[in-house]
Image (cartoon, rainbow, N blue to C red; front, side, top):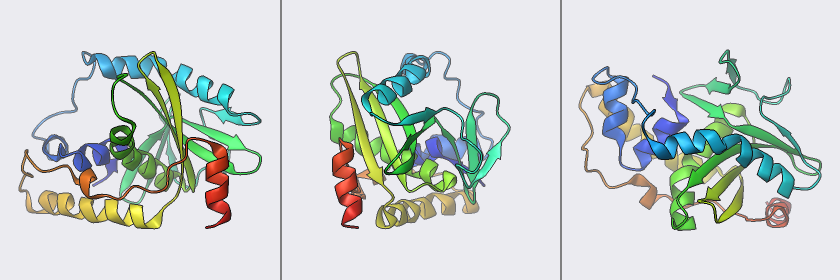
Length: 213
């Protein structure tokens, strides 16, 4: 059964019961039309990508991949880049192509102004890594609007140990699916147990990290 990048984020955040109920048919897909934060994020996604593009000199931005840009299976969803590979499925918000680095997959988020950066990274990097995995890309950027106060881009390179830790946590959830036993709704968030990969707020830091890899 395919897990979406959003499913993975929710599971690791301790909200696996909602994902379990959806996948087992206990509940339908959640109605997010009345969730203000979700709707704001949907409306600002294009601006987020454009703002990232403006801040990164020399790059080219694509909302849909060019031929050969991703290695996963592209699904025919109008106006969106939905990719599946193996046990996962994800929507890529966009792609940033840089002359010296190649292609980075972009995850765009709009969060409240006061949320700590470490909390945002812990919550959303698993989602970005699923999207990197399905697209077969080694670089990604989490592009975040903090309310109306600031924009920060978190650049990351693929980290095998971090991905293996994510998959270890997901094995427990998949066991619940196989046995038909719902997970405890009060589980401690698994993201607290994950060691984040190196995160860079500028491209020079990412380039230096890659040079020593």
